[in-house]
Image (tube, rainbow, N blue to C red):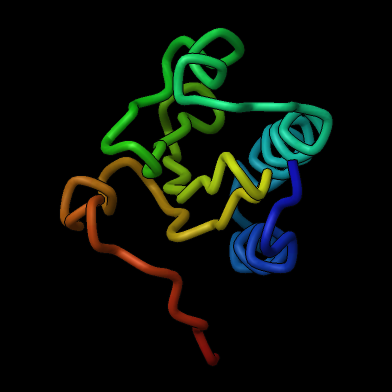
Length: 110
């Protein structure tokens, strides 16, 4: 699968500078990235075979647990084109405040 965009993951990890979870989150996101990059998913069922705790929200929207369930990664998957779009990444507490079906990535400028 092609993942758009890894920079989103990198920026999120950088935003955790000084946070006790930074290394663990980086390791978890790196592992997720490499596993998904090697995947060949045709349907949501294929995703669930590898990630049983993922939440299938709609035919293309999938939420992954990162670092246990401390962080959530919302994606949109185009199975036909083999592309995973990162839509949102944050803590589980912040996840509870978003509409997972419509949320989209917005660049943070700090």
